[in-house]
Length: 168
Image (tube, rainbow, N blue to C red; front, side, top):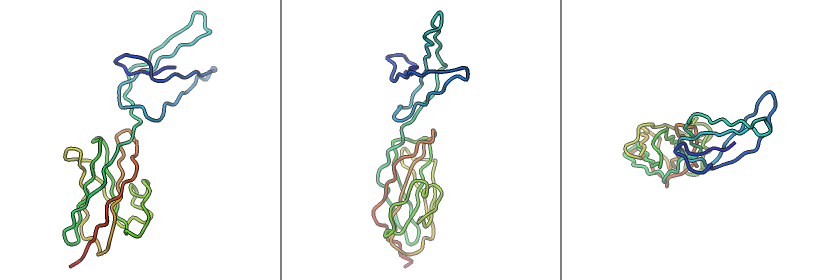
């Protein structure tokens, strides 16, 4: 089995896979850039050899890369901005006390663990996603952010500098 960009060119991966009457499954994972691909299957050993080519399918296994989140604090309100190299998907942000460890991606998305408050944005301005938080209790926080693209790829977690919020 080989897969290649549907525009042609050399195949980017090869797999040899034995199969039986139930067929077979091959999983492609890790680092396949977004693009249209076709899979080509050659059944060798049949008389004569048989070849099949799949229709084009859109594939992307590469997670987004985020810049360090920044925060604008106005009284007890804070707007967190995070820039992504991808715009199709959702940016998730959670605030945690700065003394707590960095949140896991799953905790940011679900607003669990040490997350004090969380939110998301799927409407960027350019490549910048803004997540507003209103009436946050006084304290020193960090904003942890993660991005899940339209294929379900989740970026690495990035954290802001300290954000000091004061009620007055």
